[in-house]
Length: 121
Image (cartoon, rainbow, N blue to C red):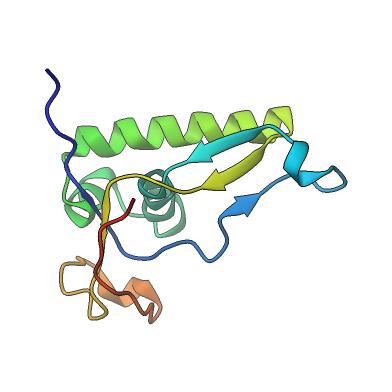
């Protein structure tokens, strides 16, 4: 029996949760679902330039977990880009940071996000 999945700390929800090819009927394009925690690893590692140890501390998971989440996220994004699929960002087990983000290791990088604490679906 696998261990229960630990909630990941997420500092912000995406502003937009759907991306896809232009010029096609969006609802008929095949969808790739990217979890909120997968987007968070991309944000932390690629956009904020955290290393994997910093990202793991930020998300309150092991470094190997961050690496696994990131690898899966990259495969999904590559599939969508190469094969013309839309990306839908939703789901996952996460905890959204408080407005003051006291748990965040580098709060200055959050760019004044206004977060509320809740469990993701």
